[in-house]
Image (cartoon, rainbow over all chains, first blue to last red; front, top):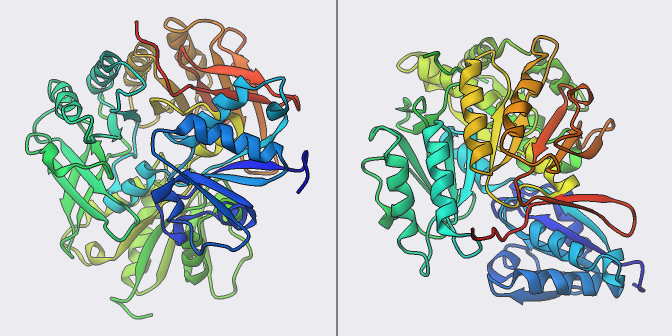
Length: 257
Length: 257
């Protein structure tokens, strides 16, 4: 390709398996000359095609990934930035659009950018659990790398008090060991101990495990980086079906006071 | 099929076009003997296959749809309940799991149920806009058909006060004409008039239109049943790129006070 004919897509892989990846995402991945991403996500894109260059990055280097993507596209390459899940939800779309804003008025600012939506982790986990997100809910990242922890605390208190279902992204990591317990303690001030809490780990991948516990029995030691935590509202219910499968759902009807 | 071999899937179509529908969803739709759904959603499933029966329902008859689906599956049919977007987010997964809970211990309770996630309207709209959901956000239905309006008011005040991005599902209808203005007025008490607000209509379909306005210029007359409204947080930004395209995004970094 020649300069001016390049393009850049930020593609959501969905949960990680081929059958939950949209055709739009698969087509763009197959056409790309350059794939850019965090290494574990790039490894979810198989087979490796002979005409493609793969640019592997560390998890934290989002701005560098975005900049390289714009530079390669400006040189005429067909570039895909790879995200897991949906790129718009705590993933690479933001970093790329932020960078595009920064370079407004320069040659990089003329790159044609497309965001390709995917099935986000909350949707994939909810499907395995039943329908925990069937009523008003919120998605909060527990990472305080790019936002102050007191903002997380204030937000958790607000949505716990207003009885939202709460999906926690990035619940824990080696560098953020105490935030999950601290956040759950805020939620415990507003919810009964019997509230269902789901731990959905690596949903859609070979290592998938899903457990439904109660808020009082919740143990952060069972949670890792690949786990999505969903805390039910006051109306969220749990039951076991005839085959022994556990379901969690939030009814469509909310009671009047 | 014979009794005991039937099955039931609740399938998310995604935004409505084939290239944003997951292969898992397409395979299950093609295999089904019976499709059940709200008529406009059933019409998104093409072509009509000779071996399939289509059961069209009115928008409000969710419990009846769920019951029929369980009954047909218990008779040995391969049943798909069709949802737009993601079935787990204000769609049919909840109605089906609620019904499954109700029939625990009966023959209908033994039906094998699967929820198949899709790309939800918020993800599809966010992709067209840039990355408005790149930080903590919530999804609220403005419908007060199944929940009291004061619950909606309390929730909007909580998330507006805690500076979440807010995606409004079911913003308006013929039977609910005043709720959107009332809800936006609550948000206006907590956000600057310059806050970006997106009106994303029929995203992924032929009639798609997307506009970014400000909170003070927002006019509910521009919103219909097919529109998703996304209200930015205090950090959400808007810009126009070299090609004249408007973008809206919420940066990854949240400032300390």
